[in-house]
Length: 112
Image 1 (cartoon, rainbow, N blue to C red):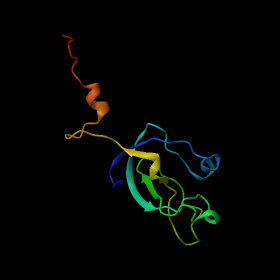
Image 2 (image 1 turned 90 degrees about the vertical axis):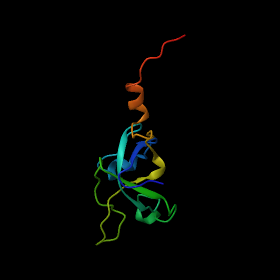
Image 3 (image 1 turned 45 degrees about the vertical axis):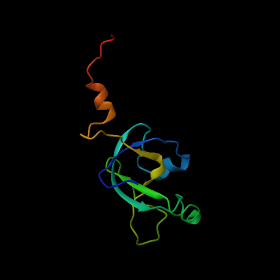
C-alpha cells in the first residue's frame, strides 16, 4: 500500500497509444516520484469501459499534473492518475538513505 508523501519508482511505463492523447505527461520507468494522493480507480480511461477493473488504486504524483479526467460525468472534477501497479516503493534504510545514495557514498573495501 502507498501513502501520501511516499517516494515511489515507476516500474512500468508501457502505456497504450491513447494514453498520450489523454495525459499531459506520463511517468517514466526507473524515475522516482512522490505520491500526492490516492483514489479508487475505475480501470479504464473511458467512461463507456468503466467498471471492467473497478477497485484499482490510482496514484496522483507531485511531479506530474494532468488534466481533468474526461471520463467523469459533467460537474465532477478529478485528475487523471496512474494505476499503482506501475510503481514500487523506493527502498530506504533506517536512516532514510536510498540504496542508490548508500552505493554512492560507500567506502571501498580492500581484498584480503
